[in-house]
Image (tube, rainbow, N blue to C red; front, side):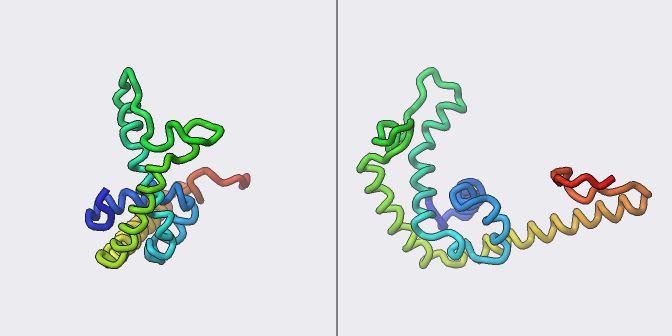
Length: 157
């Protein structure tokens, strides 16, 4: 991956990979109000990139239902007690290279963090406006609008 240089890839990495590494709940709370470089440390960002590189071909072979699955690059024969645990030295070396690349990217492409945050602010604003619009339409049509997406634990009868 090209890091911040390729905006779409960078934003995908933040939305799909970093959110899992950092925690989806945390990311949802901060992505509209803080720059990614605040809520995602350089080491975690490098780890995200490393994981993508490590598992990419493995995942592709699973999706294609290949007869022989491609193994993860640096963890398939790791030293951990479970499958895909422990990193080969090549993977650790690659992580160190990626960490330096992340540090340089953050300087060279700092504006990408601001663009990401503004994009997420706009997405959140549109979502909230749509939510309000639907609630208003439901009110006007005399239908009761759900307070939530039915994930509430409370019974309100």
